Amino acid sequence: MKLFNGLGGRQLVHRLSAWIHFDYDLNDKEHQINHKLECKHPSCWNPDHLYIGTQQDNMQDVLKSKNHYNTNKEVCKRGHPLNGINIKTNQRGARVCRACEKYHSEQRTSKQHQKT
Ligand SMILES: [Zn+2]
Ligand SMILES: [Zn+2]
Image (cartoon, rainbow, N blue to C red):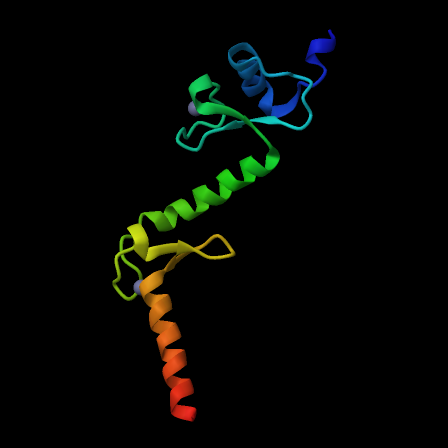
């Protein structure tokens, strides 16, 4: 059956579920079915937990889930609150405390002042 050409491997149930529920094209090579991080069961195929995305989307999810451990920390090592506007994400995707960053840059500028 031509329809099942794209099937195989671990994603089988995800793809089948998406095919049934979202009208996903099983021969679509650019997109895959990603399982949302909210659900902890990788083999689950609940359509509410699935979305059509790319491999990159999936990698983003994995990165997010790694950062998730940090997310549980409520203060940084200097005791600033790690939430809301005090948080930013750096180029490497890690969460940075704005108050600490400000502190560091002030240190830097005051050193420059001392030199001059
Ligand atoms: Zn699930
Ligand atoms: Zn801080």
